[in-house]
Length: 187
Ligand SMILES: Cc1cc2nc3c(=O)[nH]c(=O)nc-3n(C[C@H](O)[C@H](O)[C@H](O)COP(=O)(O)O)c2cc1C
Image 1 (cartoon, rainbow, N blue to C red):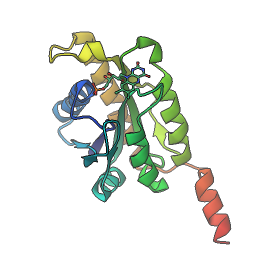
Image 2: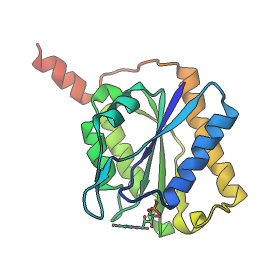
Image 3: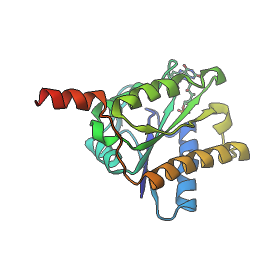
């Protein structure tokens, strides 16, 4: 089975990439039947945004489970990640297990990007995993990441894998709003 981990940051792999790497490593080591491949932006568009190509959309659509990772920017997830989300068709995430991983400088911002992502994932009818991962960037400054943080990231990854394995591609209704409107418009 396939896990797509989405690097929703415009900057070159930074502290958040360290956390995402630990999620990917857990999946590869604990679940040999799984692949864990990172989907990253194609190129920078100025200092705070980056663009994606169609291959990113394809890989997310083909994945059995997805982790969306974003640093907190201005109290929310990045515009870079929103650019990718706006390229995804509804079926790319519908009924699909999606874990949310966010990183911020301030611990007070722990629910900010997560909450906004959960709203957006509702548009897709995604199966948003109940427990998100949030880390303060100082915890990821070096490769010497605390054992407690590693354990949390492993549990986070385990949750997404378990959801995907047990649901096995099952689809849930009712249709998300966008699907309902499209069906109505088609008569
Ligand atoms: C444009 C921008 C806006 C940011 N806004 C916030 C914010 O609102 N709250 C916060 O706690 N951290 C904020 N940060 C800090 C980042 O979330 C934090 O440094 C994170 O680790 C960056 O991820 P990276 O190290 O993988 O690049 C901001 C950083 C940038 C560049």
